[in-house]
Structures are given as C-alpha cells and as structure tokens.
Image (cartoon, rainbow, N blue to C red):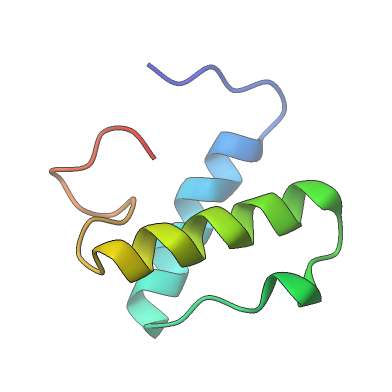
Length: 63
C-alpha cells in the first residue's frame, strides 16, 4: 500500500521507470526542489543496488 499525499509516489514510479529504461538517473544536484532531490537520491541508490528492481519490475511492490 502506498499513501500518496500529493503525487510524490506517482512521480517516483514514473521517473523510476523512465530512468531505469535510460540506464541512468540524473544527478541530485540538478533537482528542482527538495522533494525532487530526495526522489533522485532514492532512485540512484535503488537502481545502483539492483538495476532490475526498479519500480517497473513486477517483483518490486515497495520502492
């Protein structure tokens, strides 16, 4: 279950799929906001640990 309080979880999933396909996540230094920076940091760490366990992976239910 994801509690989405304003679109951050949706953004996380959509950007995770996009960056997983691209094979890279933009630097958190390029973030437009604190929330965007956190998303970039989380996706950088998640995809570095296991490139096939991002949000588009059917095995992944919690990001």
